[in-house]
Picture (cartoon, rainbow, N blue to C red):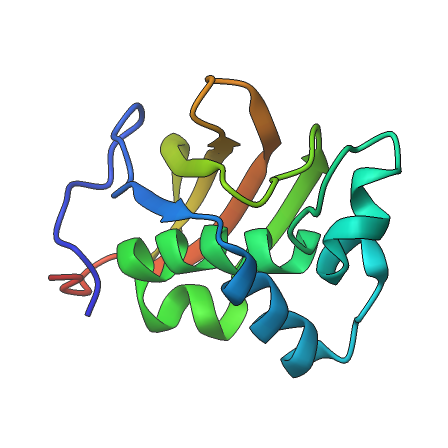
Amino acid sequence: MPTSFELKEGQSLPTVEKNIVQDNINLYAKASGDFNPIHVDADYARKTPLGGTVAHGMLILAYISQMMTDAFGHNWLSGGRLNVRFRAPARSGDVITISGSIRRVEKEDGYHMIDCDVLCHNQNDEPVITGDAKVKVKANENRG
């Protein structure tokens, strides 16, 4: 169920915090079929410039989608759009925080067209992903 909050410019979205653990990376590899050794083989990954295993980018995007679903529910799931840039890997052992805010709200034909800024950063406050999201919400819809 989405969180209740005002649809106003500058409003923060509910944050999501995740511990990046190898077991979850391995589960994602199994679910996605992506067994690239940079994700699942610690010995291999240690010898690369990354120095260790990293989470799949799509796993981190799923966490961003979780934040957007918490905020906008079925509106996000049925038609939200995400545009991101990967800035740094999320490493096994990292703690990441996904946050966002409403940048613009435009009223159009009984709907709110909402543009959001989204950010994922690690425990050192280094950006992992930056981007924006767009979602359309009925003007009179109860989100909470």
